[in-house]
Length: 206
Image (cartoon, rainbow, N blue to C red; front, side, top):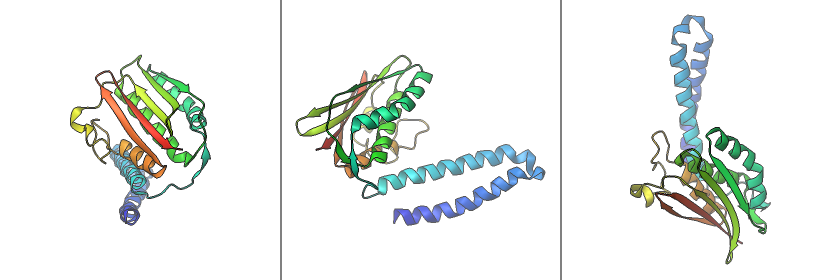
C-alpha cells in the first residue's frame, strides 16, 4: 500500500518538476528562476522523504548475503571521516575480530551512515565519534558512541517513531529507518544517553 501511495504522489510531482525545469530554460521567465529553483529543491526534498518513508515500510531486506561488519565500516569510513574533518570533529574505530553475518550490506551501510551523521550533528567541534565492534554473549555488537549533548528527554520514549525529531530542519525519519533496518536484518537497537553523549548499540543475532 505504501508503495502505491508513494507512486500516486510522485507522478504529479514529476510533472510539476518537469514544467519548472522547462521554465528555467525559457528566457521569458528568467526573473522567476530563483523561485523555480526553490520549488524544484522542495520537490526533491519531498521525494527524499517519500524514499525514506518507503525504507521504513519495507518488510524484508533486498539482498541477504554473508558480510563482515568491520569490512562495511572500513569501506564507508573515508566518506564519514571526510565529513567529520570538515566540521573539525573526529571519528575513531575500535574493530575487534568478529564473524560474518547474513545481512543486507546496503541497508547496514545506510544504518551506519544515518547513525554516524546523527552523532556528528549532535556534537560541537573537536569532539569524537567512536565506532566499536565486539562480541557480547551470543550477539555481534556494533556501537556508535558520541560526545554530543544527548537525546532530549521528551523524545527518548518515541525515538524510533517516524517524524519525531529534535532537529530544526530534520524529517524525523533517520532513526526510524535505522530501527526498521535493524529489525529486517535480525538485530535490535538499544541506547544510553546523557548530557555527555549518546551510545547506540546495534545487536545482531549470530
